[in-house]
Image 1: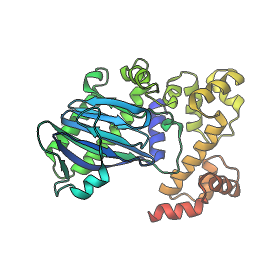
Image 2: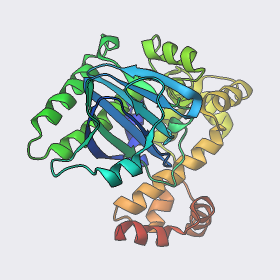
Image 3: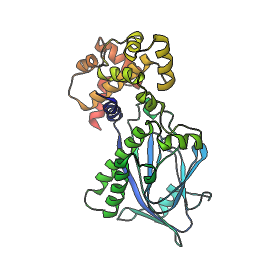
Image 4: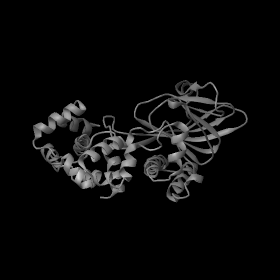
Length: 325
């Protein structure tokens, strides 16, 4: 396992899944307020025209151009409009008055100017709290002109546009997978030193473009400890052993890990064991006892107590509910 495999494992454990809201064809003066909703990562891809996006949380404002994608990670309320400042109409009121047609397109407004958008979201397991999602800004933007070093992301944006234009069989499934890919690519690129948006949005919105976790994953010392935890979370790790793996003193490692990851090393290990167990309960046929052993618990009762304390439900009851869904 390397750093990118670790990131893939994290997102698989988060049980990332995406859906489309609708395609939107907005004309003339418009301003639509999208309400807040917990744990959603919203996307708006501008296919044609121009559109302003104003995030209520942090008051971040950005103008989108054709082929650009805005990501709003924290489920916060935001406004889509033709100008930076316009009194918005709440989205539920708009949908009640003019729901999307049979073709899945939301049409609103009349007159000059136009914005054609693809709107969707990604969702995670509601109970999972991982530092990769912590400290994200209220919005992030992927612009093709900023992706010179990442042609694969630029190609994904282009494919998103082409597939939405084609509107053929299987479009929904393809578009939702592309949204997931773009979110993971955005997170991965944001951890790269010198990435243009890492500095641009940090200064503009007084917030980090990436989570601190991505910075830790790029750190040559901390990444060794994170990889060790993910490779063998069942091992009886101690703070001293993890510090040795990272090639650091115990005190320096503990301080740096907590600062960059946002929790202690042993706290991260404990949480990761539970998240891995949760995924195995939902997706594997292993017995609960086998899962407990694989995730570093000496006994099934100890695992059951930890799981219930963390999630408010025992592992057996969670498995039944997950299979039922």
